[in-house]
Image (cartoon, rainbow, N blue to C red; front, side, top):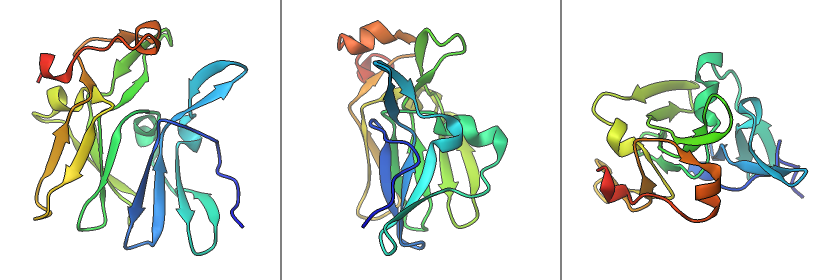
Length: 171
């Protein structure tokens, strides 16, 4: 029997973290009174422990990094060292009326709850969503394929209507 996750969600990622034997859930969206909202940053990162069937918040996340988890339609790829590469996605803009690409990528180190931001030279590649990110067989590279991408905000109405710029337009 499984416990309930902190917040039901869709558009999130679920990545197995081998050194911990747990699944890392990041971000996503939920429905609230007929309105789609981002999972609040305080609830946006949690582990599922298959051995106990329980969900638990990721402990000790630094406050200045919580906004990185308020994301949807991103990718999360397990790396050979047990860390997780989180790439792109969409997030709420400051006024809440527009949805912007998360032009940021980072590596989450779940064993230490630390982060390495990857911003130098990666923003144009990070500004995408609905893409895939696959670790190569050698374990030394991640291939980003497809999705939507742009360098400017996209309205929520355009996203719901299926209007998104092609990733190849900017990358």
